[in-house]
Image 1 (cartoon, helix red, strand yellow):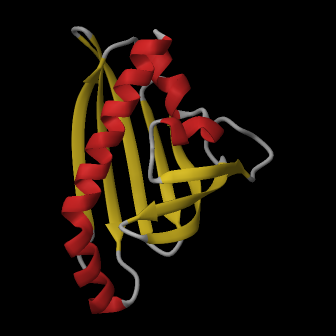
Image 2: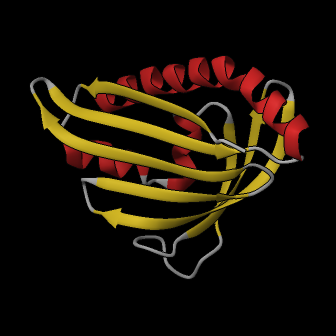
Image 3: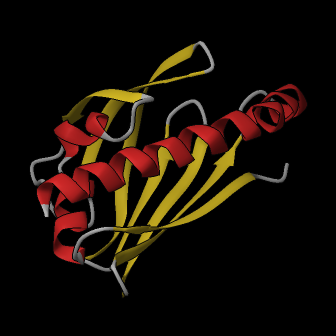
Length: 148
């Protein structure tokens, strides 16, 4: 099955170090990721490759408790995570300096569960997921503005 890919970019109104601190502040990600809550770091360490955490994810009335694992950690440049829950896949956040702040690219590659039925369902959810993630970027921009 082909994955569902959502690829967004935004210029956030602050420097990379501020954006990096916010996107790696695990327990407070709910402040900008409204579909996620109750983050708990489950690994011994909080920074770097191998960080593991779980979060409650709620999208379109479906609520799951999903684990993630960091597989890419390039401080202030790139954060890559593996989704290890019901929906598998990965998320990549890339930061680069830009006029007016930090340009962030957020790419999610999601592999549906349940074979063809899951693929149909996830594809149907794709527009809502894209709207949700765009909204998240707006919340993150406001948080960056307040923090910077």
